[in-house]
Length: 406
Image (tube, rainbow, N blue to C red):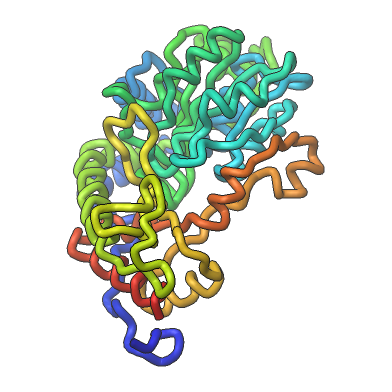
């Protein structure tokens, strides 16, 4: 069968769902009300930011929340609010978006880039333990692709060593770990509302906190050093204006009512794709290989598998679906050929420790063989594709089979 890259017919010609989806009636009503009110800023007397903070705190199993301009600023504010700054080290995973590390640099601390679990690609207690030093002040588990990190061992380790835990939940709206919402499992949790995320206002972020004192410190960082309830021109500590707008909050509030249904839709697509992947034939030379672990199934060797969810996952929000390739393939060719078949995939993250901008700014990388393997072997199915009807999963599997065996 001729690849579409070489003039053959593509597997799929119909478009995938757009992201973000069109505004619904509730969003239009909310946004129009804010625009008509003239109360667009968070300090003008409107209620949307406060409502969003309260709703997200309750959903995250926390008492408090602070809305912010984006999640990078949210991570920065959480670190500063928890007392992390110059001279401190913060352990971050090697397989994550660069903002996890740059937020640490923004706070004046040193990102220590630790390896991830070789199977699920999340920060683990073992990889954190290997990176600890007397200067370690905090750890930043990332709920990668909407899958919760295995938090209990991480929080136990943090408690033992007196470390703060900041959850990077930018991709994990609605995810749960052992039936507990992510975001409220550590000292602070940070969500993103950037354009690609499961809830979006184009940009934006939110910090949830369990403790009143932590909330007040984080709120002060985000509000020019003021104290909650204090004088408008009283600035007892150093802070910045990191606030979200009322217009953005109005876009986001109605999304909470449909978030669970959208998560269910993505999970249905992912389950269908996992079934379809099991039927992909092995490329020539790999038939009946029967390699160990997840690469082997009832039908023998599987050339493509879904990256497993970490232990303790009870609800995966499926921001992305990560696929691991078990056959050698030129990634640039694979991505180009899949796009030509009408099934675009994403190449995923490079390991943070390979980014000279970070190491030049003082980040310290640990040996990260698992993250380096992921950069060679893992590709992503993006959120917009996961919002398709589950029958569309067959297109992804068919295109992969065509490209890998073609």
